[in-house]
Every structure is written in C-alpha cells, then in structure tokens.
Length: 266
Figure (cartoon, rainbow, N blue to C red):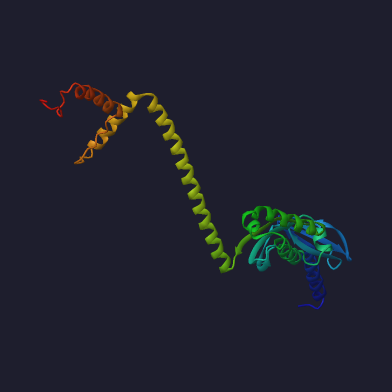
C-alpha cells in the first residue's frame, strides 16, 4: 500500500466516525434532549435527526409509563395498629427537558416520594378506613405524589395499594367480630319475620272471625290436608255454637221430667 493513501484512509475513517456520531435514530417513545456546550437547545425525535459531534451531547428520555413497586412497609395506623402494606406506582415523563434538568434521576426520586407519602398518609387513617376506603386513599396518594413530581416534568397516573397484611391477633379479632355481626343480623331478620308473620295472622284471624263460613271452610281444608297423610287419629274440631245449640235442645227435656234421670213413681 502506498504511503500516500494512508492519510486519505485515516481521513475517511474520521469522517465516517463523525458521520455515525452525528446521526441519531430514536423510536416513537424516545426523545433526545440536546445540550450544546452545556446549554439546552431543545428536544429532538422521534425518527432521524443530526447533532454536531463533540459539541452536542444527547440525553435520551423515554416517554413510556414506568412501573415501580413499593416494597412492604411497616405502617402504624391512627388507631395504633401495625400493618404491612405494599403498593405500586405508575408515572411517565411529560416534559423531557425538566425531567433531565430539574432532577438528577426522576425514576428514583418519584419512587422515594411515593414510598414516604404512603407511610405518611396511612399513618393518618384508621384500620377500617384502610380496608374499606382504599380507592379514596389511592386517589389521595396519587394527588400528593403528582403535585411533588409536577415540577420535574413527571406525571403520576396511579398509586395503588396492593396488599394489606394484618397481624394474626387482629385477624382473629376481626373474624370474631364478623361472626358476631352475622349472628346479630340473623337474629334481627328472624325477629322481623316473626313480627310480620304475627301481623299477618292477626289480620287473618280478624277476617275469619268476621266470616264464620270462611272459618268452616278453612277447618275442612285443614282436615283434608291432615287426612291425606294417613294418620290413625283424626281430631275433628266442633264449633262452640254447635255445642251451645245441643245443650239448649237438651235442657227442655230434663225440665219436663222425661229425661233419663227421672223417677217413674212417687
């Protein structure tokens, strides 16, 4: 190889290196924050764009949602119950420049803010609220963390409590309480049923008392139902009016002296 070609080869290699350093291709979900001699000049991407090698520096920022799981935290609620709570937070970048300039590492910073806010907020609620009003607590957590991360160009979309681990003693106490509550509801429902049944029976008795014929039909219907079961003994209820009529018919006979207990001679 001629010595005269060596400089040209070196120059061509340098040009190729600079060309590939100047060409950038970013996908749709990435943006490049351009620093020229230490100053931000703007954001480029997605697609193909060029920078000035050595002079420009590019910081790649992803716009996709980042999911960070908050490990279990020991939290003391307002009513002095110790629970272990873990959660998950979802956030993404809405301003690439602020996410690079305003904070050194927005992912770790958002994670730490979500973790400390979780412990702070849960320490202000009772255990019952933590178990029954989880959606409200999640919204409150999201608003607080989002207000902190907004100057960083980060949008928090969700802070979700995943699991609440209770102590064994608290689980047993809640189980006993739930069982007692079910028994109380059962007794209340039973008492209400008895009251309604008694009221219906009272109205039925008033109706049957006003219509004796209906009472007789009811008695006969009951006799048919009982006789269908093939019982050996059948008790037939006799109305009191019939007994009074028989007694009235029997008394004149005894008064005339023709009854079975009358003597035949003096």
